[in-house]
Image (cartoon, rainbow, N blue to C red; front, top):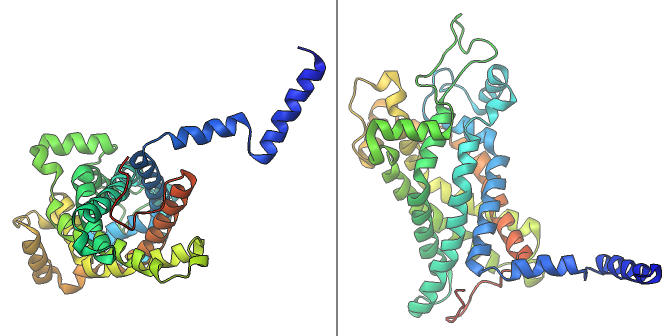
Length: 347
């Protein structure tokens, strides 16, 4: 090949890179365009979930410590708990259990968002009498939340057990001279799952799934309902605004979480109650409603809202970032606009 020909080819490639028409760019676009829509939704949802969960991991750790009345933390506020974690476990303490959390949230969020789109399309195609308004988002969101929970719950159980463990690596947790360890000390997500399964089989891996489902159905439904309804009232020229998506997502998460938070507290306590020495003498919670009444009777009604302040601090950015990242990823992956009429491709 002559030098002039090489120069011409190089010039063409450089020009292609500048105007976005290079062969490599076309290859990248064609790869994404060739994926089924549901696969793109899985990728977008998983990415959004991982990004949002990691962003609020320190607040999530503190919330679990407050919910489960962990020794040395149950009487502290958010700020003091964060300072204590930093002092005794270092920055890494903020992210204890986050590996299990991300491991769970990627498939959870991927399934949650993808099945929401699938359920929504199915409802529109088969129950046209419901229209295309927020009721469809409420039903599809609830169903998708339940589906995602059932598929990923053991990972949530592992995340909670890891986050519940408190190990003093820099000094003493309390005022005494003896460091506090919560037994057993799990080594990671796999170790938790193996130990729990060995202890009680598949049923043990789903300990606390009752309140989770009861809580997630209205929460997930309300979250999508409020988010989509708020977006409908935004002028067309602001529909792609990042701040608009963040604001709508924040309000959606705030309202949805407020109504379902006590169920989240019951779930956390059911997940770790066999690890709490103070609770060994009483029977375990038989079900969700037994858990609610027992907590009110033995710990006071305020315990049903333990960690709610930190949850507000966490849920606002978490849901806002999640929805925003999901919509952004859908645009990047060229997912077509959401269906508003009866016929839709479910490819």
